[in-house]
Length: 275
Image 1 (cartoon, rainbow, N blue to C red):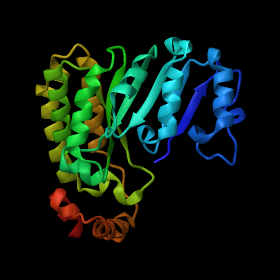
Image 2: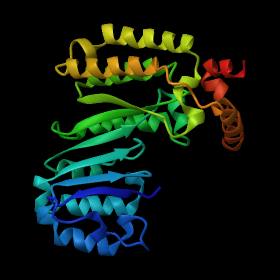
Image 3: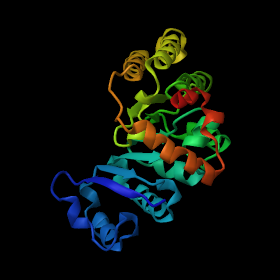
Image 4: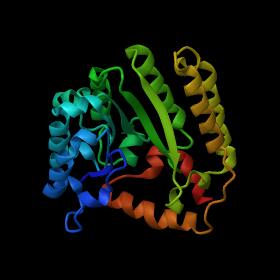
């Protein structure tokens, strides 16, 4: 649960390696990094923070606060990722001091689906923090990002409709984005048979046709383009690794046992993998 400060733009005059010590694997723990950062802060215009969970790491939050209180923050753009379980008034105040930025909420499913995939997060906490994020200033971009995988590929429409409700009822500026699992063979969404993914694609197309985000929102063209891309991704003809299904059963049920979970209770469509 440590965070890595992933990129620092020093107007291309310095390399990140100058601020990194091999014996300090997390930049948020490095006094050397912080000293050099603030020595050069007048040249810094971009700050990217990735995790782990950035906002769980005390040192990262203290660093973010300190940067935000510097006058240069008014000229600085940030890009921060979080799983949505931590968003305090003080963190919101810090983010609002920057010129602009992007906060990425890594949320993979709706309700208990997200609790399963992002164990041990609680959906009620995530919902509360998404609601609180309305206090972020309007110039900040808020993304709800999913990583498309074998679990939620059949039910992703549930999360889409939840986001649509957030945008419509709160008149908030949430956007949707997605990526695909590609480095973990047993989690690729193509493990789910095409016939089920076609059903999922139809539900997403319905969202495209009927949702507020894709038909009435001022950024509807952006939203439509992303959702169309999601449909194409769901229908991908990429073939899973020959051992992907075997790896799934070698990995997922044992992990369920440790966590006290059952993937079939949350994602019954995966019974098809047993065929």
